[in-house]
Length: 267
Image (cartoon, rainbow, N blue to C red; front, side):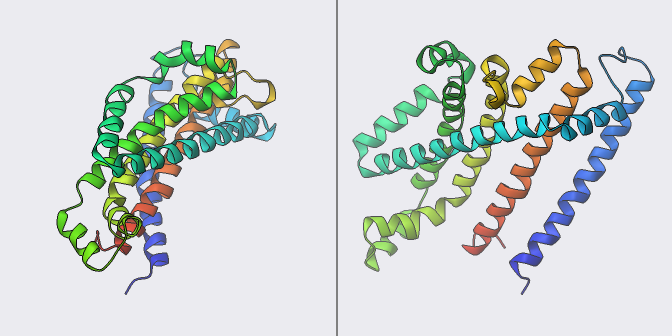
């Protein structure tokens, strides 16, 4: 039987090979567009120029600090969002009245884009980290809550009856029946929430991310755009894409595969 570690390294190698082929093709296409002069060189720099800018901004520490600041904010926002989602799910599971309240709350809040809440957010939290974290929480909370509640609702009565027949309490049912059966939904919600939160973070930072030395990648892009440092803008976009792919493919996807396989949901 293949071990989890071997499966992980095998899937990791496949992941890097697939991504490598895609990125090589993309870079070749980019260079072709650059040399054909479809756009001015100042606005559409070569791959070499972009990676030189990436290396320089990494070397002087500016891009590393901005990346770290953004990751800290999204970590806190994701953590708060997950905790609130867990609390609201527990509330919805308590009785039908609470479930109706939570589903109504999702119906109202989930369609609201974070950008629409910016005026209120600025009034409530001012310009700074509090506003950005609020936007992240709003972006991540509703996909996680919606998917988790959907998973809980889809648990068949047969599983519930089995749990009660072996003497599981309500908490035992949640831990032993509901959560394992809902794991695919939970991970789907986490991935959607992460993608929405990552976009919301960059957008929010570009609008009010200037908080001194604690500003992040969004404000870095805004600054470089203001000084027409286009290669640095593209360099920061490279960092954003790499982080997004790494978290989704190497963290969420691998965690999902290992966990669902453990619970017998994947062959």
